[in-house]
Image (cartoon, rainbow, N blue to C red; front, side):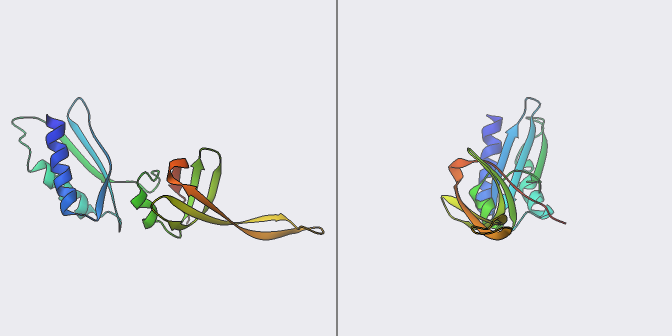
Length: 153
């Protein structure tokens, strides 16, 4: 019952803020509520405060004691929602698929798959030495085991 109430409050708040979307939601046995969100343009502290208030101000601590934690998906967190991919266009991703590991620049993100591009050095078809070749891979979301943004400094 408590989890359903919190879920309804969260859904209502996210309905109000279409630019934000849920990554993870959990309530443990000690009534610690943990909400992880992301946004089409990122997540600000104010966004987390908005969600926190939308939940906390509509629950009665006298009725049910709880703790609440609202946070954004971390930079090193795997991408789990298709909307996250669109936000990371032109960034380097490390993608583990059911059959391969690919590191490349996210060139496209459609409703069904992503397109990664990268350059590699390969032996020349004729003669000695190597040439730089541009490669591409179309990867279906269903084939992605894990995808992470590679942070470069």
